[in-house]
Structure formats: C-alpha cells, structure tokens
Length: 442
Image 1 (cartoon, rainbow, N blue to C red):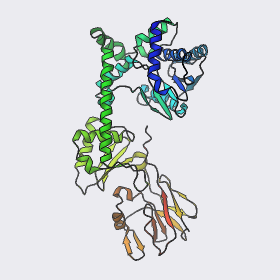
Image 2: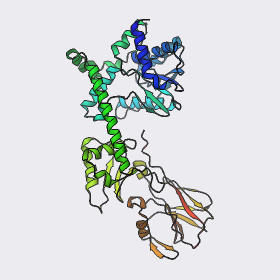
Image 3: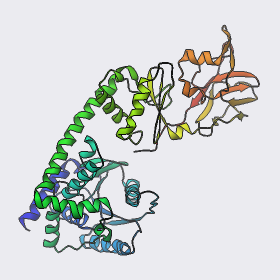
Image 4: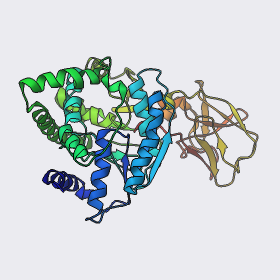
C-alpha cells in the first residue's frame, strides 16, 4: 500500500472518529469518483479497524438515459467489495430548478432510509467546498452561507457526514487510479449552462492558474467564517433567551418573542437573533425584504402590523412577536353539530374538542366568532365575549380561530379559556387540542 493511500485512510478515519459508535455508516454512492473512492477507503479501513456496519445507497433519478446503467455499475462495485447496496428510484418534479428538485428528491430518499443515529456519508471534497463558497459569494450569501457545507448536520433520524472536505479531488483521483477503480461521469457536468459547472470548469481552473493554492485558502476562509457563525449563534441564543423565547401560548404551538428586549438590541443583533429564531420555521428573507421587520417593529402600539414571509407571517400583539405558518393561516371556520359530547369532535383544520367531566346537555354546536357574542357567567352577569378575551389577553389574530360551544342561543364554553363557566358548580370544562403550527420545514 502506498504512503498516499495510508495518509488518505488515516485522514478519513480521523474525520470520522466522533461517529465510530454509530449504528451504521451508509455511503451515498452515485458511482462518480468521489463516492467511489469514499466507499473503497472505508472498506480498506474496516479491514484493520472496528467500524460500524457499512452499506451503500444509490439514488436513481431517471433524468438521463445514460444514467440507467449506473445502478448496475454500482452493484458490481459493491459486490466486489462485499458491501450491501440499496437502489432507490425517485421521481423528480423540476417545476422550478431541475438541479434543486433532483437534490430534494435525493435527500428525501436518504432521509426516509436513515435509522435512528445512523450516518449518511457523502463524497463532497475540498474543491466542492471552494466551489460552494464562491457560488454563494456571487449570490450575496451572509456569514452562514459563506461558511460552506458543514462537515456534519442532522438528516432525518440520523446525521449527514462529509468526511472528505479536507481532501482535494486530485488526491482522490490519484487514489482511484492507483487502485484501478472505475467510475461513471455525469455528461451534464460538462455543460457550462449550469452556474456551478461554469464555476468548476471555467472559473476555478483560471483562478488556480494564477493562485495555485486558491482552493485550499478559500476553504480555510470558510472555516474562519464557520467559527464566526458559531459565535453569532451563541450570541443569538443569549439574545433569544433574554427575549423570553416561547414555543407555545396556552398550550397552542405559537412560537413568540418578547419585543421589548429585542428592540433594545442594535439593528444587526436584532436581525441575527431573528434569523436564528426563524431558521427552523421558515425560509429566511433576503436582505431587501428585512424592511418588513422594521415596519413591523416601528408600527404604532395600537396597530396590528404583519410581516409576510414565504412560509407564513409574523404578527405583533400583546408586546410579543408571533409566528404563524401558512398551513395554520389557511384555516376556514365551519359550523359543526356535536351530537355526542362524550366523544371528541374533530374540527377540520383546527384540532379537536373534548369535554372533561360530565357532558352538558344537548343539542350542541361549535361555531366561531362573528362579533357581538355574550356569555352569562355566575356572579358576573352577561359579559361581552370581546371583553372576556381582552381580560384573558388572547391575541386579536387568534380570536377568530377559537371554537365556541353553543346550546341553541346560549354560549357555554370558549376553547383555551376553561375558567369561563356558565353554571354554578359546573362539573365539566371544554378542552381543545389545537392544530400544529408547522411550516413543514427541516
């Protein structure tokens, strides 16, 4: 074995040390140079090291006729190595960007396959990292984007690992040729019509001609930016804690922040905190769209401003900033009869209602606010529902969604407010299991 091969094996092993006790290592095997070398290196390492079980996954997109032969190529390679291979065929709906659609289909398949704690290993290398950083630079990315691809991130129930980010493509190709490995070439990689291909085929070689170490130094800069992003994350976490970050309101999944501590920060820290808060909830707005935050923040105290984003909207109410996902906003109220209150009533798009205790006499009906509702309360007389909701501090944007329990013309109960009882010594309360407020994002 050559010294170069030993060096590559040792560098790969060092990159994977934190995950040596994982239940399984699964290699995303495209059949190309990078993943071919990665799988071969792992098999060599497994002959002298105790490693998790190694297997491979090949995702077939069906986008090119030439690609129809790739699953068979991968199968022959895995058979020669004694590695199990799973071939997944996916459908790609390229309604916007074909590249993006293929990537989403591919990672959707990986996510579905990965078990709890399992690791998916992909073959992106140092040149890919440099290409990614430049590509994002030209698109105006911030610190997080310019930090490049992370070496590790969560993926479904497991983790995505990129253990070759410190290794150049030239090193991988030398290894492949020295071991007589064959790999497939994607014909689309030669087309400079795609921006990333143009970077890879034209721009990066030209840069390397003038600055031979450019790829390495770009990746080193990305490492510095990743460290800076980590510090910004720590700062955001501290600021969000000070802003009383909450995930629920009266057991409803409504993420919110206190506005006061947030607006006491500098503009840059406000945006930093909001970016980290919104990241798991929505696609982040571009730089120009942040004017919406300023309008929301600076609106009059008695206003009800809204900041629309791609996956939902932000509202301001009761001194807090609230996140409402599109799916949550799409609810349409429907009047429903409740024939048997001893069983839960499913509310289309709005969770479900149930009665805790002995059910009230019927016939019962579930309605939603129209305005002017009145509730008779023991010892308090007839009270406007609007005033009761004001007293309870229920945000205005939420009130039209609250299920109201009626018996003919008598308002018996209000979801979220079980303390409102219409009978002295009432033995039942109205319970509501609210809907989720999920954007469906990872």
